[in-house]
Length: 259
Image (tube, rainbow, N blue to C red; front, side, top):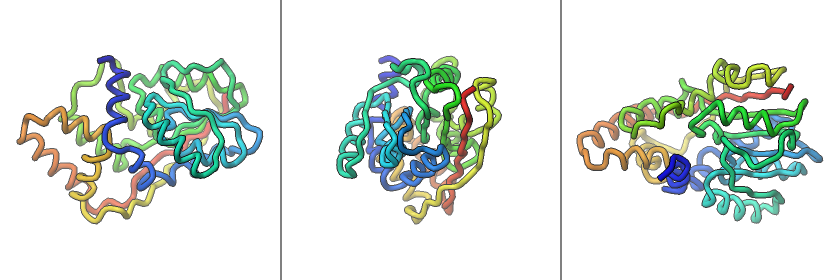
């Protein structure tokens, strides 16, 4: 199985559409507002998932294309969009090799999506390529120091080794890393650390069990250690302790102009 096939399978496992609706839905409108999306704009959402950002972008009157590597997420997004009478295009696409013409979008966005492409330089290069000069690149990414960043750090010792050259997703939440990725391809950069309030989970163990059932990256890690009960128990404890009492999940809003 190739790395892309593994990523598709990971995000199709569990029930990410439930997590998107139950927990992270507010991030989409935050990104749409930060990007200044409105009528008449052409917008590409990279790593759109079920459309948490793409659908509210379309509802502003923009012409929106939602792209994602995982067709199961796109299919769920189409159903959600239809229920809201949102009109947009859904396209299966690899963030590291987007099937769109150079400079073909006014605004390129991603809400906790492109950050999971394993090869950051390739993905950032594609965001730059498809955005027109003077257009906007806008992102919402989990930070390394926030809850999700720390969750990935906690799971890392139990995960299968990443492919050579791959980088951890939460690095996209570090402004210095983004500066190195985009370089002089952007100007007028604005960043803001914000927090998503999550009150759904009463205990760390409740959050852990929810993630074990719905969140692809967590499911993949537990599958990797399924034959080692001591490791499963250790990770169970570590995630529950990490999550206990946490109600604010930090993320970075990044907005820049394509040079």
